[in-house]
Image (cartoon, rainbow, N blue to C red; front, side):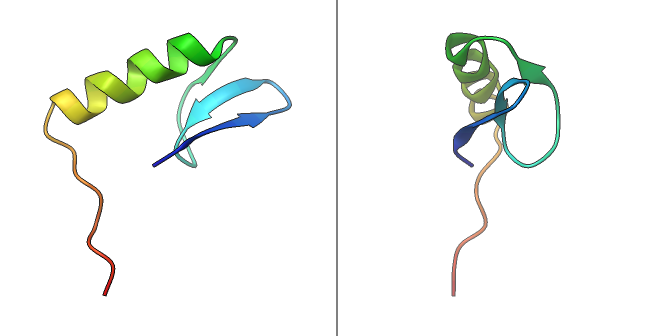
Length: 43
C-alpha cells in the first residue's frame, strides 16, 4: 500500500491514522511490513 497525501496529512493505505508528516507515515508502513503484512498477489 502506498503512502498518500490527503487534506489532513499523510496516510498509509485507505483507512487508518493520518500523520502530519510523511516521515511518520513511512515509519508506520515500516512497522506494518515488519509485523508480517504482505500485499495480496494480483491475478
